[in-house]
Image (cartoon, rainbow over all chains, first blue to last red; front, side, top):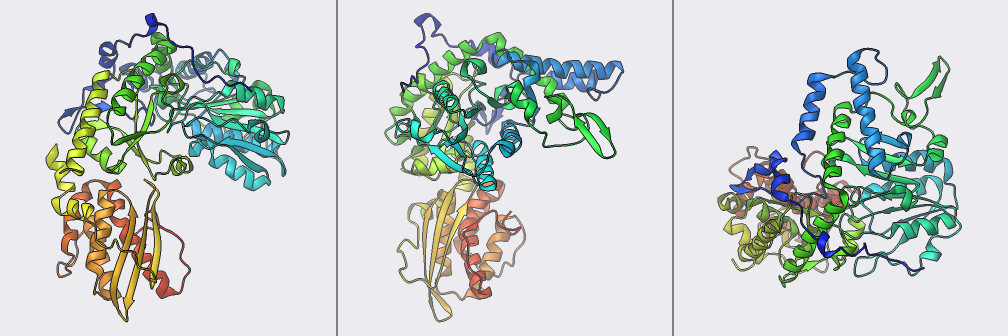
Length: 425
Length: 160
């Protein structure tokens, strides 16, 4: 199988960076000082900052049309329902124009994957079946499948990674075999930044009659994603990693799949008829959304999607390629820094994991914080992968639409200074 | 703000970090345990050689940050020549110090007092406690005749 990893190479004319000066004005938190320095926020793979329009939308909901959704017959209830459902439409449009009813709201991408694994998985996976995942999964797309395999007696098989941080597809035809019922993989690694060839893998999985779940937590915020082109059966992502509020996740699944899936939470909002000894479920997506949802945050997710659309996901991708190329170049100049993941910025997102050969990532993160620079240090909820890389933890800088080259310069400068502090001090 | 940073990475901590005690691995330990900090993935192995009731030496193998390395080094240094009961008393004092609580000032905790700056950073308190949790778990398990599992900084309420 021929695998094409690369995005289309950017045209010279498209190579422009976003107007970060204007964008930054929309993010009030970016004006903050941290330990006397301008905040340099490079922890976007963990969560992104929120533009004023998203913050305002939460307030507008509570001050203007706070009501429970889907059941009230009064004006406020109708307004709340219509605002929340408009988010569903926008989310459906954002990932390639799927049907609105194919969008199930959850708390986060983790819950989305758990819903698929518990509901679809328990019904369809049996002893002797195979579940395929990769060695680069976040715990969110790892532990639900480990648990499902244990519970059902299914076998768990891994697509390995190679030294450069790509999936090693040399044995893929053996790994995805006729016993395989589902392949679950990340679209973009939250540690290595690698963008996986999900389309090719989906194609192969489907040839074996297996379904594919894609963890899109890191991709939807940063790349144009069309789940229909990718032929994904399930696609999971989180609002808070794409300018939206915390507490909102999405599970996309094809209509036929959602129709045959059973709910895993029961109660209000998700029924069509209930008697004392019997209940029948509402149609998807409602049957998966028991209880009062996180209305305020769901309402405020819509302006986040609008904001990203206004900039354009293609341009966001180009901006991140530029920033990432620059950061990779500058970091490579530091001989004490080891970078993980693909060297080619076209094969990766704006996530750079690295280690200093003498300074522990925790100490590095603490030092950078004293410069106002926020990075992540640890195993990034991907312990097996980080162990595979031969370290116990890494430092990770991750970029978004408001990050600039001069912030990369500050990072590099601070890394040099950390050497002076910890090693040559 | 360098002062804030320097308050955590005090000279004495940096000294222990750069030149840690207890590096020579004890080959036939009387007490041995592995510890892990699931927050950062750090791992530590502690080995203790007893001479009757007295701790003869402690070796610490730590793949950790400056704070956990320094804390392990201080542990190796202070435990030498102490009884198990004395070590437990010190461990209680260290725990109290790191949690910002009062402890008996008659207990000499030596260099460990320098770890006080860590109390402002809850995540880093776990780094400082890793070596102590690992050692005390092993002692407790030994006394109770229990089989040891790997100690983690997330165990029970004593280290949270």
